Image (cartoon, rainbow, N blue to C red; front, side, top):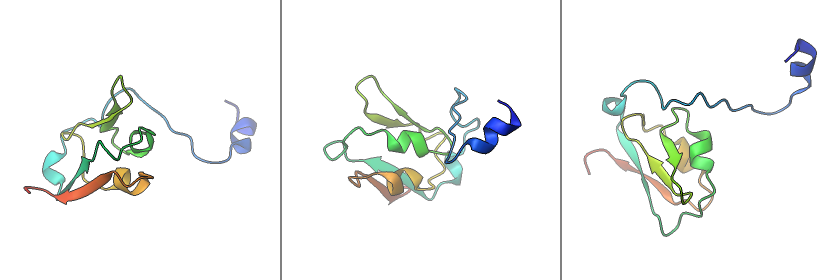
Length: 92
């Protein structure tokens, strides 16, 4: 992409490098996401916005969280339109 073309882009570009996170960060977490599958509408926004790529979608479009790479930041819960993701205290 040329410099001129890149100046024309507005908004956010999401890059998916094909790897989930990169290192085990599960011990950093104080809160972890829990998905209420009855409330989930399979929109995929949780996977799209997860900064560590810890959320993926299975073959049915349901989100799955790999807690090894989840830092507990809460972005997935914040972006969930039906509020189907709750951040719960670790160890509960």
